[in-house]
Length: 236
Image 1 (cartoon, rainbow, N blue to C red):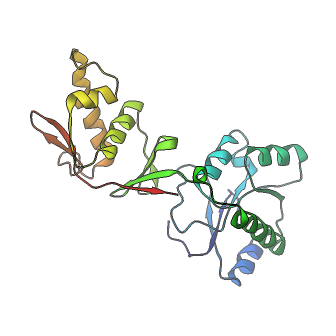
Image 2 (cartoon, helix red, strand yellow):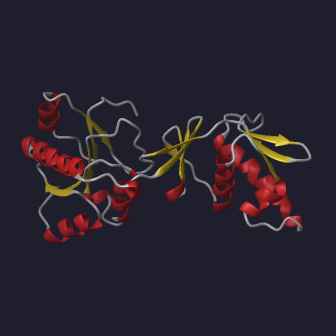
Image 3 (tube, rainbow, N blue to C red):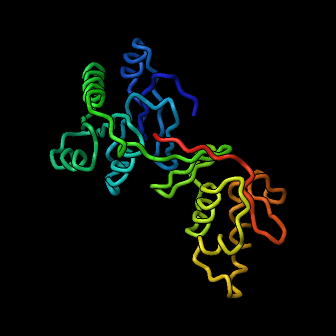
């Protein structure tokens, strides 16, 4: 997603109020809209604020807690009308603020600034940062067991994810079949061990550009497999 260095991200199915767009434009902010939280992956630069319509999370407010831990940016939930119960529920779930529509541009701006000041004055905590593993065009969030390729979350089975994590934790090393089987809880002595090849094949289909000519997961004959690309570990 291409964005202006200073931008607000609004997640809502309705069109954005042009008054908000015009107001924030005068302060050098662009407004980006998504209509769904599905496959939401925020890459630097992060938005100055993330605004989400309540209707998109009313059945899963856990997503607020997940987002607040993954992205150090103000999260504001908004709704069509005032509702004390919903407001309290969203704040307790981890939202930084709750607003009702129509959102007045100056008020929204002031609320974002107020939240940002609180965050800036809060001593940094190592617990607030999460580990991200980067390789090629993929990002892995181990704490959430998520992997994104080109900003789209991959649908990985538990065994596929465990295999991938084993590879990125040991990049550019030959990993034996026995070791990899242990990572996916399959007994090396059983016939089921052939499942490793099946799992590797499925994983290649999802992360390789061309699974028939893999560039990431290399087969080392008689030894095992080799993850051929370097992996960068960062904290966000």
